[in-house]
Each structure stands twice: as C-alpha cells, then as structure tokens.
Image (spheres, rainbow, N blue to C red):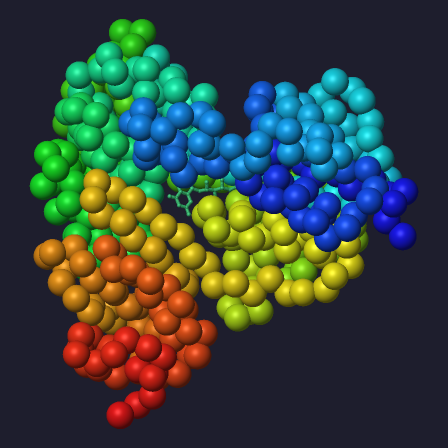
Length: 411
Ligand SMILES: Cc1cc2nc3c(=O)[nH]c(=O)nc-3n(C[C@H](O)[C@H](O)[C@H](O)COP(=O)(O)OP(=O)(O)OC[C@H]3O[C@@H](n4cnc5c(N)ncnc54)[C@H](O)[C@@H]3O)c2cc1C
C-alpha cells in the first residue's frame, strides 16, 4: 500500500536518521526524503561536549550512518536544506529555496536550539553556544587560544563542557544560579557530588549567581554578575538550556506547548499524518498521564523508530522511561525515570567516593534512579520504577541486600 507514497522527515539529526532507517527496515517501499538544514549528514551530539571537544575523537566517529547508507537504502538525504513552512491541510511543505514537496506522512524531528541569553554584551565576540559540530569546532579552536574560560550555566552542557575545557588545561569558572551544578534535576544532595567533583579538578565555582551582562571592547573580557562582581574571561560558553524547534509547527497552527504535542503513537494532536520525535516532541506518556518532552540522546534514538512504525500504521504506544547519561572527568552516570518532586533521596554506596546509586522516592516509591560509576544496574533500577511498589528505604540503601526488584516488597 505504501510503494507510491511519499514520506518526508524534517530534521537530519539522530531521531530523523533512525526514523528513516526504520522505515526502510520495516519495509516502506515508497519515496523517502530526509531534509536537514545542516551541511552534513546526521550525527550524534553527545561527544560534542566530551571527547570530540577535547580532540580525542574525530568527525567520522560522530555520524549515525556511513555515507553510503542513505543511497543504498534509497533515502533521499538533502543536507543544507531548510524547510520554511508546512501546510498539513494540503500535505505539503515548502523549502527555503521555494521548492514545494507533497507528502503522505510527515515526521518533524527538528530538535532543539540553545536558549540565548538576553543581557547587555551578549553579542560580543567570544561568547559561544554549543549545539552543532560546527559550534564544537569553533569552541575548541577558541579554547586553544583562551586563557580563562567562563562557563555560564550549570546544566548538562555547561557542566560537561566545563569538565572538558578544564581537562584541556584551561582555567575555568563555572557560574550559575543554583546551589550546585545539576541541582535542578538531581536536587542539592546529588548536585553537591558534582560541585565537589568540579572543585577537586580546579574549576572555580560561582554558584547562586546570575549573569547580568558581558563586558568588553568588541570581544568579551569579563562577565558581570547580578551581585555587581565581575569575572575575567576571554572566552564564554553559555549553556542556558535549549528550546524545542517548534517554529514550523507553530506557524502551521499545530498544538505546541513546550514541544509539538503528540499522542502516545507520536502523531500530532489534531493533525493526522504529522508525527514528531526527539527533542521537539512533547509526547503523551501513558505512565505519567502527561505530555513529556525528553531532551536526551536515548529518546531521539528510540522515538525516531517508534514514530516510523506509527507512520506505517504499526500501532504501539511509546512508553519508555526517560533515560540519559553524562560523563564528566572520571565520573560516568546514567539516570532513569522522572523526578519532578520527591520526598526523599536514598543513597546506596559512597557519595564521597563517587560510586553509588541514588534513588528519588515519592510516597515511598522509586520515581527515578541514578547509577554513578556503578554499572549494569539500569535494568533493575527501571524495574523498580516501573513496578511502582512501595520500598523500604533502609533495605534499598543496604549494600548487603541484593539489588534486584525484590527490594520493592515490603519486609
Ligand atoms: C553538546 C551536547 C551534548 C549532549 N550530551 C548528551 C548526553 O551526554 N547524554 C544525553 O542523553 N543527551 C545528550 N545530548 C542531547 C542529545 O544530543 C539530543 O537529545 C539529541 O541530539 C536530539 O536529537 P534530535 O534528532 O531530536 O535533534 P537534533 O540532534 O537537534 O537534530 C535536529 C536537526 O533538525 C534540523 N532542523 C531544525 N529545523 C529544521 C528545518 N526547518 N529544516 C531542516 N532542518 C531542520 C537541525 O538543524 C538539526 O540538524 C547532548 C546535546 C548536546 C548539544
């Protein structure tokens, strides 16, 4: 039924590339276009703040597929091709070049873009953001000439980039409004692990502080904080979070609320034939009974294929637990679940040695878990979360009790 159809994917990132791959592996025999505004084929972003930024891995290691993959699977990959508008009622889209393309199914996998700081001096040379490979190349080159780097923002990108820049031997100051790096997601108890980790590696931390502006003559020379202090720096990296790239959806009148609203099958609410996956998608999550937008690698990796199956009429709700990972210096971690508020954080292991599993509990149930320098435990952590049964915090914290889903039974 699908051989004469045209499916179009907008966004040549991980979600778009994996969706294209799945459409073919599931037997879609029609015309398949993958349109991306970046000049190169789809690549993965996590190394951009880690090994790639440090120059430890090359460009080839980033790509989702080999160059030949797209032609071999008759995927019309068009790079440097921006989609300017979509018209869902007419099943048509328009490229920046003016070319119009009709489609039977459309997947929006447009990702997210860094939030820009709107403060005086934000346009000075030397103020950087990090999203694309090109950004990483420009940042790495600038860092090689810089003496003192100021990283603004203590979220994932800011914290990881601060670690990498420090590992490259730069003087690094990390500035942010929270009490500890990553405290917004992990809370103060686990955020302190990251605060101490950065301090131990010689990063200067300026916490509880907002940036009021950037000072300099043509180039940034210092960062002005809201308490009136200045921090000298000849290079600034801003990691102030990212916003979903919903501009096409919004202009087309599709429902947008922190992402394009899609149902559990990843199809847009009220716009049959339009789907979303990855950072741009606010997908109805059966477990949370809410639209959830997950800005992480595993979500793009898995939602792309899920959306592809949905486009082919293979029905399945996307119900994976959110999952992400981060590497900073010699501390690797994985986080599963979603903890927006919690009553208690239980630690199993040694926070000071940075080898532990942390559990976030709400009403005695594990809602999220993070393993730090402890490996091969994601499955039991996720089983505990999915089970949703009450746990005994003391047993959970006790390393002499085997860590498996029996922990979920009350003693
Ligand atoms: C520096 C960095 C480090 C990260 N590290 C981690 C990590 O350690 N762990 C983790 O879990 N996650 C990490 N992430 C997050 C992860 O990379 C993202 O969640 C993932 O890239 C999302 O993939 P995506 O395909 O949804 O979007 P993207 O990768 O953003 O791809 C979307 C693509 O669509 C294109 N596009 C947008 N609009 C249009 C248009 N109108 N026309 C044509 N093309 C368009 C964009 O240019 C882009 O190429 C990191 C992200 C960054 C930036």
